[in-house]
Image 1: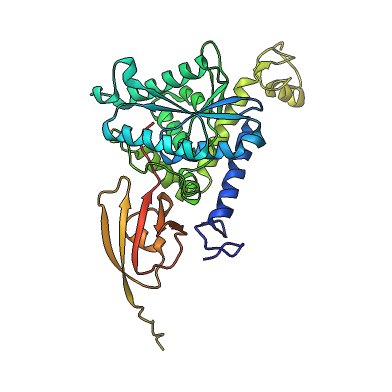
Image 2 (image 1 turned 45 degrees about the horizontal axis):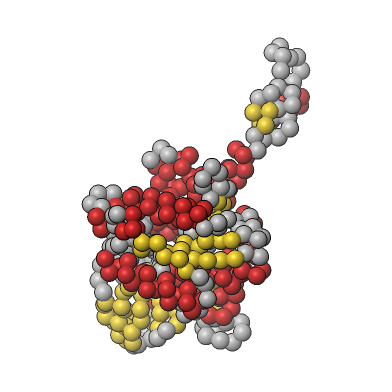
Length: 290
Length: 80
């Protein structure tokens, strides 16, 4: 299989085959487009990119570094050593090597400095870990003067969480999954530059660019059944992921722009609500004053 | 008249599984006209959830199988 440029192909997308170089170019333009479409990062921002050493965060930080000038941003990396035995040791080594190779300043915070590690947590380790990461990322970014924290959440992570939130009756939590959340109070802005990018695309970019990454799975990681489900649905309904991601943003826009109807005062996303427009269009004798 | 189907030769592939698979490796004997995608499906693996790597280069999953070793990297990672 050959790419249009004549080199050996590594992937087929639609009807086209891509070699490593053409694939990487396509990947970078998708990330850039996604960042611009959703305003994920803004010109002039100092970005703290959280890197675990896994394929997604490695792909994100490498892409951001390559797009630094185009986007007008400055990228530095943060790795949090969570104290999960050999896995954490290897993760830190990978991040040091990667950032060294890419010329990205790396900051490392060790959870044990706060008096515990994730290995000390017997129950709900993932929940404690997630909280620790969010706490440290936010505090470090704010104290060091970063404008935004970028994480390597990919399309499947987000869609799986939307489904989980729907199932558990916590759909309102999904607003935390949006591509960008502006900072407020003591919270620094959060960004997900890979919002629309699939994890397979991330892995292929990492392999194409021969980036250092850790293929090992966290020993405490839960069964990724929700993500597997996303793949099953996508196979039956191609475009499902994109549909969910776009509707999440659309929904937020609608909710975010609510105002009072000029005629009746009821909530609406337009100047005059749909009901008043219908009254005007179809109404004959009005019995209830608007 | 019945059309005669050519019987294709069988070759051996050593699949080395990386990341979250129940087994580490498996030797599979398949007809040489198969694609990796077809072989993965027959092993119960959704080809969209993996990347096939031969040597140090990924391969499109619709590539024809070749004798020898390939790595199967699982793209689905856990965590939250």
